[in-house]
Length: 68
Image (cartoon, rainbow, N blue to C red):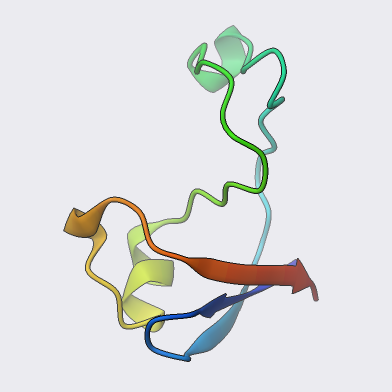
């Protein structure tokens, strides 16, 4: 579990980590062969965006996260 806080709205929530992407090699076929991502990226479901009061159509937002 991680605690995610929006720097824009100040809202926080706890979310379950269901997958981790290798930022050096990307993801395997089981995880859609996604390319490598930048460090410290959190990809979240629409329910997380809603709970944080953010618009998912913006694509990226600044957040902080820590182990919960």
